[in-house]
Amino acid sequence: MTAECGMATGTFYQYFRSKDDLIPALLQEDWQTVLYTAEKAAASDESFAGKLYAVCQALTRFQERYRCIFTNTLSFQGRRESERLCGKREELLSSEAAHGHLTLHASCRISAFF
Image 1 (cartoon, rainbow, N blue to C red):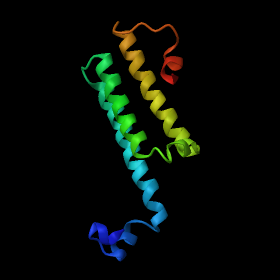
Image 2 (image 1 turned 45 degrees about the vertical axis):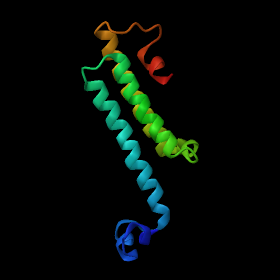
Image 3 (image 1 turned 60 degrees about the vertical axis):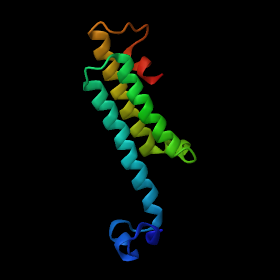
């Protein structure tokens, strides 16, 4: 793996304790990208549909990249991150409803969950 990257094996182990530490690090970095996209979309002047589309695209890219292990992210850490993303969706829905751009037939929390 290190040879394919043009990296010395010793250099790899300066960043990761083992090969097993690489995948969670990549997954965490990509998940942070999803959260950043959600935060950026919520703060943008885009329409609600545009904001939702941006977040869905980021989630789709993440899920496609980690399809084989995506279901395993429901560990405690994964659940906590999932709840954090749900909170961002709730903030977005609340803001859009407050500005009259969206009518919800359930609470923001329940709508964000779905």
